[in-house]
Length: 159
Image (cartoon, rainbow, N blue to C red):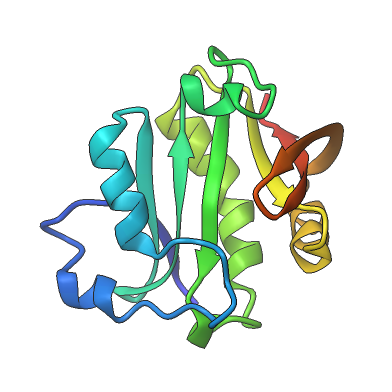
């Protein structure tokens, strides 16, 4: 496993790579293309691809400024992790955990004003909650109503 976090660049990430991305049938999260499309309308959202030896194994978005506000974050010092997913074919191989552990360093070097990563996770998604805790995120005790139920806000301090 050789995980690399790469901000989306159309010259490096081909359409074939994006089209091959697979999610489970009942997942309520977008594929890489949806994050890329959203980022074209919001300059504060950066799509990040999770690569292993040139293959996309996962993706997420990093949202600055107005992104963290939706979950009670500080737009000057927080960054929101959104739409985190791992391609269905690469699950249960520690890609998610390794990515989340590498994320702190990635954010630290690419977003020098950021002190904290925040994210929202559905109350019913206990597997994701356990993963985030294992990666050093803590429950902030803030809650918000989401489309699919209650959203728990997790956070990880960087400094």
